[in-house]
Length: 242
Length: 245
Image 1: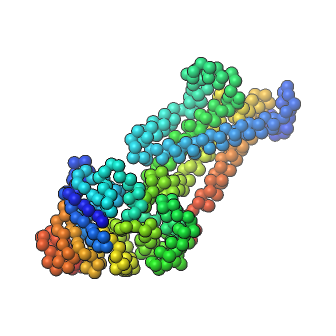
Image 2 (image 1 turned 180 degrees about the horizontal axis):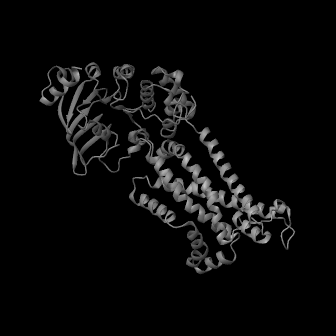
Image 3 (image 1 turned 90 degrees about the horizontal axis):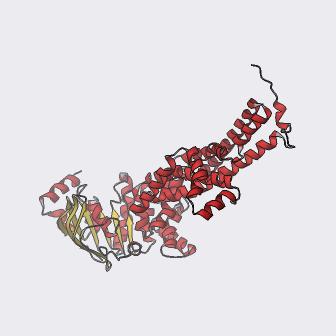
């Protein structure tokens, strides 16, 4: 579903991605982790073309992102993304947030979009909040709406960019529960996250990044039980012992 | 002070005519409002467009927007008024120039409204630009990630938020339009300041004249202010600071 081959990216003279290669097969969940500044968010933003790259190849669902002729808007409509800071549109109701792209991008009629939107809100347990505005919800609720908004487009895969990093601890669980459920249903997911419990539970593989490199890539259990690189060992010892 | 007060002067007939001074001021107020509202409409439409251009990734478009803003905000309004009135018609192709000078209907009014509209558009553009740039970058990312085109992202996500944020500075700008419209007297628009000068010379009651004109300008500005306040209140987003819950 997602093929990343020898990807490199520079901001001016600074290299932020260095020869990164990995893949996510259909129905797989891959977790990307690493210290801040390691390039993991940049990598995931390359997957739907929010960030460009200078070298390498990136193919999503058969569409090559390096190709200048690629219609990025069409690709993005099929790849959902959930952000660290939710990024709901604050000036419209929760339901309108779910309807807007269905109508403007997919061309669904408003009734159809509302029906689909309400069904997804019910699924994330927020149907009662459909007419509220984002700022009237808690962080955890907003992130669940954001996931529902991504699902409303019937995406072929979902990208998560640190979906729980901006949440209070007691709200992390409700968001992870939704993500675990999605994984169980076979959604293809690429998740940048530090939630190692989540990674253990649902990830097929873990990709560990540092300084723009993919330092280690391993099946989840192996990564947690016996990390190969020193860098990954040090990282895990810091985040697991808290 | 040896001054001959006469507050009844407004109902007196002007010298050599059958209108009253009040009629003059009413005509003046009418032109002031007409010039101001026309200019404001222009300034809003152009300002939103130019302010948006300045935030686009396209270098040529952003440069065009920047040039527009610098051109219209770096010259005194009065000089711009004279340039549009005396210089621009000379620069047009000969036939057009002649038509503008001789036959264009309401020549002074149109020139003043266009000049003030362009001048104000540069200021509106800067406010709209700062409003767009004050939004979190993630909003644009979220819009694009859903498959919106750049114009759709601006239309549905960025501009509705940015415009709400800049209503307070736009309110000041709307009030400024009424005050700045007084410069139009210099090219012969018979607006409030023009009529005031005429009434003062004709009636020799300068204090009464300018007290009345002061009150009329003040009313224009305060009505503009209250109108914008209503729009601000209506467009508030529930749950955000200052919004209803």
